[in-house]
Length: 116
Length: 115
Image: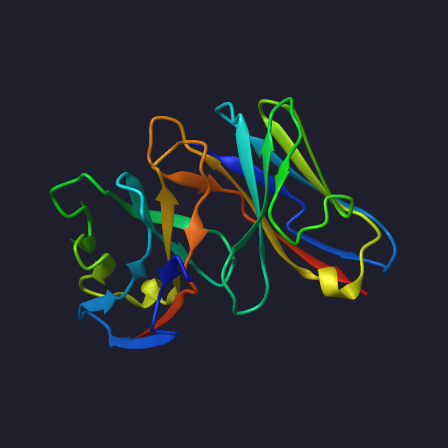
């Protein structure tokens, strides 16, 4: 079974509007971490935001916020006030057991295209 | 912030030759480095986990004799694609846990084309 599922292969958003990118995950661990990364066409992976499974508050980083719904096992990324430079691939990822030695497992990604 | 430097960024090689990709942690020590492969329009797939001073752990289906990983120091991990074939053409990217952070820092990636 897929551990990380991103159901939106592609999304369009109008510049200056907000957009939500979906992510659901599957784990039996109680302690885990959820991440969002941005990958522009250059290929680099840019860390956006982190949410720990025990964090009670939704994570926020500037224009990025994570809508964490633990019971539903979802960790959607919300980008507010979209900019043209936000056009990129976005990957949701999970680290199980939230252990420093554990690798990230990535979802299939969502391509976001911001329209002027 | 923590930086991982990856070289080369692009490489074209002939079928049957070997290619070495280097990842260096510039301002921190990385006891563990993760190597991913990404085919066009697909996600990142973990190939192996390299640990300083010990053998790498390979994911199922990844040939350890073809993808040689060496992590000889706390700041350098290398991936060598041996006897490369066109089907090995892909984007290879390394990653390490950033110190004092939950996040992982990634190298800039290597686009390998085997002709």
